Length: 310
Image 1 (cartoon, rainbow, N blue to C red):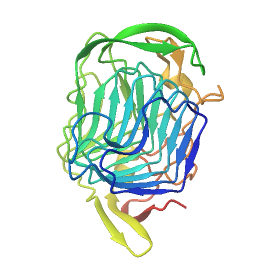
Image 2: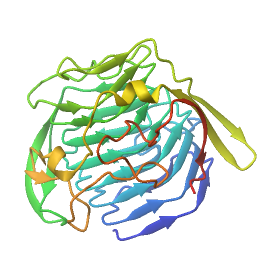
Image 3: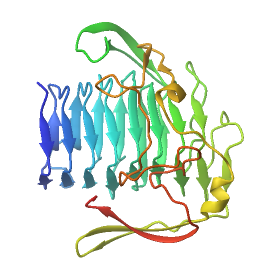
Image 4: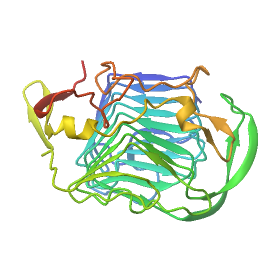
């Protein structure tokens, strides 16, 4: 089951899942949707409850959605190979905004706002996180013995099966605020790859990130408000101070290959990835992009309309 386009819908007050692809949602596009108040009354128990819950999101794009007040936001459960999670607004979810379960990558997560108390729960490897804003904790589980599939590129054809040790994730050019940051990111069976991240207030870097930029005295505020016409994020960054540390544009070459499938991070048409635009689609400074989802050039306070986008 796949090849679907799910666009510009409002899905709310469901007691199981807002949008579910339990039999697969391969080669699909899920964009522009508002999903809220999913499984909040807890009338049922069991799995498959989330704002979006998908098995086999092979080459699926999940972009530009607003997901809030759900038991959890987005749950990608195995075979999310080649999927891209981009430019989504998550907030006020009871559980984690994103749960990646027994995936092997390559899976790209970029330019998202993770504003709930729990940003990510990971029981996978091979996920690349780039230019996200994490205001909640990241939990990394160590190992799952289940043998789960990986595939030939851009295909449902099976290439092999592998168990699920943590690691082989990439974190580039993200901002972590008032959370544990990446101190849970250890070198287990597969080492992580890290660079260009910024850690503010209480956030802490991984022990494996060299020369991490840690600014404990820098509080950007982060206030999300609902006004007529949409959601607005108030932030304040010392842009000049953050840009003193140079960082590269995130590309296929920077990300390398996911270890288990031995495949690069590319677009679903096979073209190279270049994260050259921000949350709003504005061009990035390719010589020294600002970290996080917004390309900023001036120090000061911003009020940004983050939903609807554009």
